[in-house]
Image (cartoon, rainbow, N blue to C red):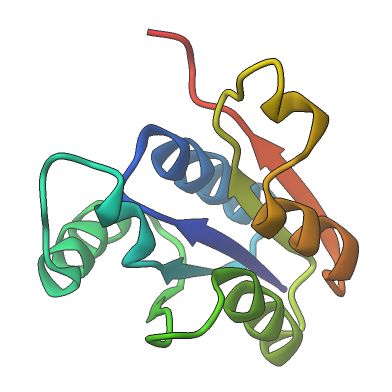
Length: 132
């Protein structure tokens, strides 16, 4: 069994990672984290993916779960990376983080989230970060 998590260095990404870790533990599944550089463009702190991967490994090593970290392919759509990873690994679940949207934005779900929800080969869990 496999749980795939879409991770970016944002509160939404951290919420997805936390939920994915919990789901993988509950299901006794392998965790596959798809690390995207896309989130770094939105944050003020610019962290290179290598550093981010090292930090993720440090966190995940604390769990008693098998895991793998994959980086998104440059120039490739994040939704495509998550869907193909889920397909390649035979995932039972994809976990993604959603951000709060403006009233107008609520009319249209983010294009990546929408594509993942509609095209995923398995169930999708969408989570929000806890309010601060």
